[in-house]
Length: 340
Ligand SMILES: [Zn+2]
Ligand SMILES: [Zn+2]
Image (cartoon, rainbow, N blue to C red; front, top):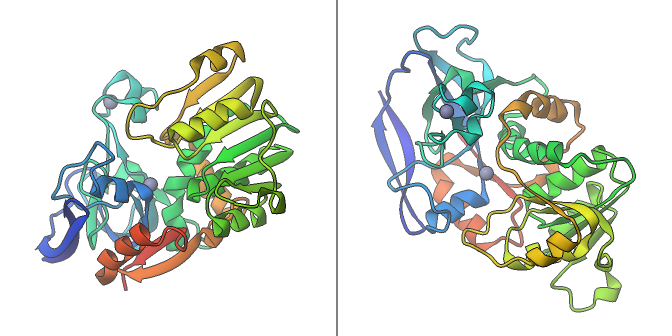
């Protein structure tokens, strides 16, 4: 039995091929991948800026599909079950893995980042990485559980209090999820700061009280940037030297800065200001423990996923989807690739 696969092959390059399908091993489940989200990380890996992954490799870590075959010793899963996939795999035996923090495992890697991902028709994954989808949940929406789970993990670290002011720097999908989560967590004033009008407008629709375009030539027509030292919380979902500088400036004394975007290289920061303002700086990546709550939040509609999905491609056109994501960041927010 053969399956179609797309592999990243080198600098911004990818190629389709057919390879043999493997039996799911003990403890594994074979998933027929039906929906794949395109993530900025995919583009960073393909350009070599992510600092991980080695070609040739099938990328794709925002995944949903149905159970196709079940390996030996797997219970609780049947062919046809609709699932999304937690891509993170730890060693399973170290202290971090055994205490529910597999994302801190020294041996951990992710499906679609270090391990072969979902840019293929079928993928064998550990049964422990599957989450069952409620019926009211489209597979396209289910791909976004992965992105959203990272954001919810960040929110959990922030200890948000009702009535606080918060700013989100970065208007990509994660910034737009953070806006919704901050409002849901009780922040009274949420400002989204970005560079693209369509995303900022969507941010307003999703609950941002203000949206600021840093590129805007006529700032008085738009919401102004919050004054320095006004924010209890800043989430840096952009991850560059300018966003870090802005975040430190905007925070009140005693404020909390969530470091979420990946700079890809060392950046300068005004540590003296962070010390004198008694800021708390928090890093955040994956959060294995929040997946069940993410499924619940999407199913109940308390976080809106579908407005983020702006473009759809078929699996045969995956190369075109990637090219579009790379070349048209003003138009595309979240691109989903579906198998017919
Ligand atoms: Zn991603
Ligand atoms: Zn481990």
